[in-house]
Image 1 (cartoon, rainbow, N blue to C red):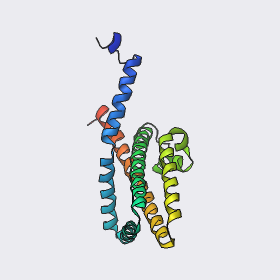
Image 2 (image 1 turned 180 degrees about the vertical axis):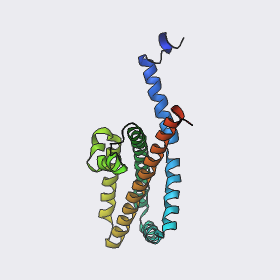
Image 3 (image 1 turned 135 degrees about the vertical axis):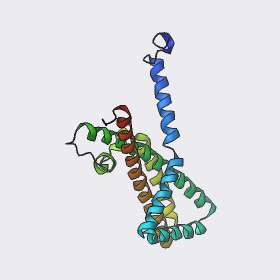
Image 4 (image 1 turned 60 degrees about the vertical axis):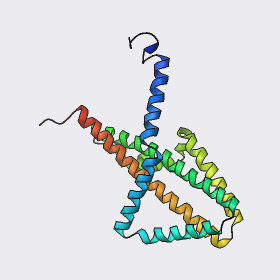
Length: 200
């Protein structure tokens, strides 16, 4: 039986199993595949709003930078790109959970003011990620270290292009978090509607 013995979901084995399944579900759904999808959506938004000119300038600067890097520098640049992508995925997972939390809080209390800025941006800006999300902090620290090393090897023009690259990624990650929060909020609302549908 599920209730008794080694198959009991409330035993220590059950909790380990539950944690592993939840982690697997999170990684499967909130993956870099979804991040790429969100980035395409952000790009489409930018094009519709007429703000893609600045982004195009950044892309051109990045392309020029890559053409001028040595093989070793290109290898470092590739690692930096992977670290930015990893950070975007972790921030998606963080903001998605915060979105679900906001949906439930808004449902049960109309007085709360838990917005994207308060639940997502403020904790990260105030360093909350250091304590609650050590992997995010570790990833960013390594990323900054590599950026500093690469910057020290570049001349002024290339440094500006690397700055444009970093700025572009910072903006993308903010966009990913915004979408993650929206998706989490929508998921929370959907759960509540399914569990407690409105009376017709």
